Amino acid sequence: MFVRSLFGITGMTVRRAPRLTSPLWAPNTVLPSYCSYSKATLQPSYDRSVTDEVLRKRLFYQSHKRGMKENDLLLGTFANRVLEQLSREELEGYDLLLQQPDPDVYNWITGKMELPPELRGSFMDKLLAHVNKDPCGNLRGT
Image 1 (cartoon, rainbow, N blue to C red):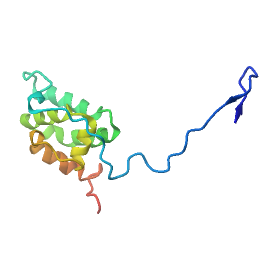
Image 2: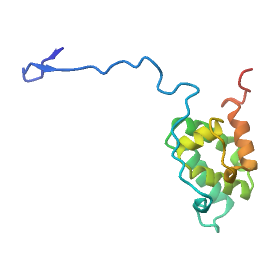
Image 3: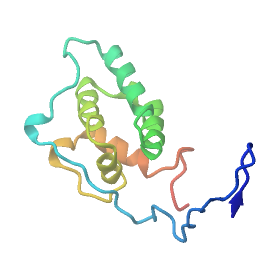
Image 4: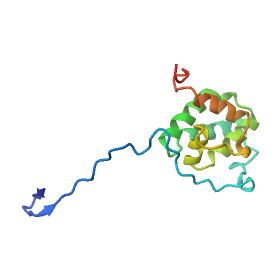
């Protein structure tokens, strides 16, 4: 296809990108893992002297602004519903989860990859229960 510019120059050829015949992320696709943590690097990302209220606000913001829309939706709705009810220990565990790379978090909470033992806790049970429901609170598949 030839294109005529504003100045009358012709001859430039424009190629179209090929169409994708399959979706980029099929439902059973596991995202590439970028996990590079160890027990030694799992440290709180905040000063331990902060109050629970300040920590909740920080985790609330981080839950909504992840970088992957899927995680924004899953973690953001979790933060809206459950974050106020979490204890200090659960908030610290949730903070450690939010420090991990987005593809790994997504794979863990959707059950596509095994959850590391260091990140297991009562907050994770609540998060997994939340993920097994849709954002409206209805059970999936019903």
